[in-house]
Figure 1: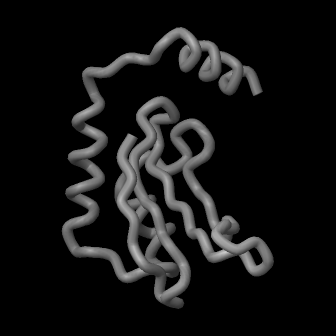
Figure 2: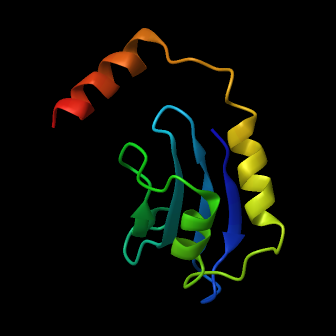
Length: 104
């Protein structure tokens, strides 16, 4: 798994974008300080929680663009993150979860 964190357009938001090998998807999370729980964050936006939901780096970048100014080379970085995991295989628990997900 990879995770790259950026400051959001509104300043207080945090945007995380990366690759989740077991789910075979890129992901984007937008977090904001929780309005009532000091030190906690609330999720404003989260894509890439389902199997192959964001299959390309371009899909992840498109989902994140409304929330943050992103480096021009981030797509290449994300694709490199994905390629570094190509030789890895799932463990028994990951295999079982994918089996369950594919039944739904």
